[in-house]
Length: 312
Ligand code: DGY
Image 1 (cartoon, rainbow, N blue to C red):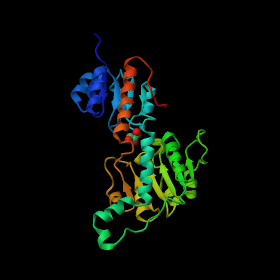
Image 2: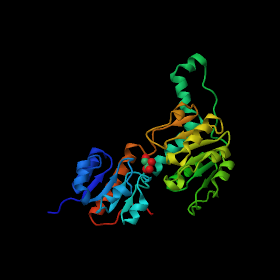
Image 3: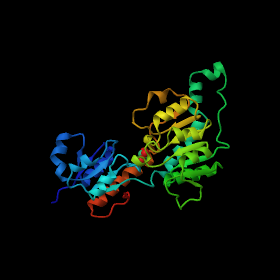
Image 4: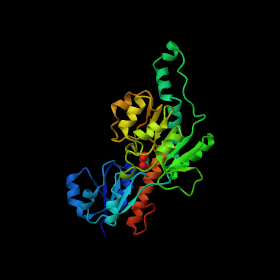
């Protein structure tokens, strides 16, 4: 009887997913130093269920490593370049979460422009009855949307915004031939032409602080920024200053540079709508993501090609 291949878990998957994985693999918990020490030489696969980095140093401890399966479409916690150099396949969970994240982006956009959070706080504090109606807000009407990134989720957001009759343009390093929206190579120039940015570009070194003080200034006083990507894509200090000083109107954020830490300055700002990274966090979508992680790992164990490898 051959023994099950070893699978390192960097976080705790749901119990039933864990049980499914255990049928094919013998799992090792990254937190369990002794087990990792004992099993490292035999570990062939890593399942990424936590923010903890899977970097070159960890990979160097795993000479038999062949596959890293990331729970999430964004795989910035994995050093994919180092993995490629070692011939290790990295997989992620594309497609299954596009609609959920796009729905959340549009919901967050409306909540931010129409100030739903502050309006609800007004009601809950009894101020509607004591002081009168909540203030009048900005509107979606007349806005022009600049998408930062036009991958699958960006396209799903753009399709939804067509239903709101909002013009869409986008910035990315290269134009996406699959879409007809106007492309801007220069992000600052695009920000000067629009009043609303929705950030949905991959995280990582290539996009760190892509949205900086200059981009925010170009967006202008009515500007609204929505971030569904990674916190590191926006210069968080510059964003706090822009919100505080009225350089832009408001921000709706689902992601932060040092999650789950959220800067106290952001929390204190009335013109920031803050979600705890829930873009894909419905029961159905998280289930589909977990199923894809399992399917990639089982394909590996069966000697078949992975279902959703990333390109590096
Ligand atoms: C992703 O898939 O990268 C999302 O951010 C997870 O919610």
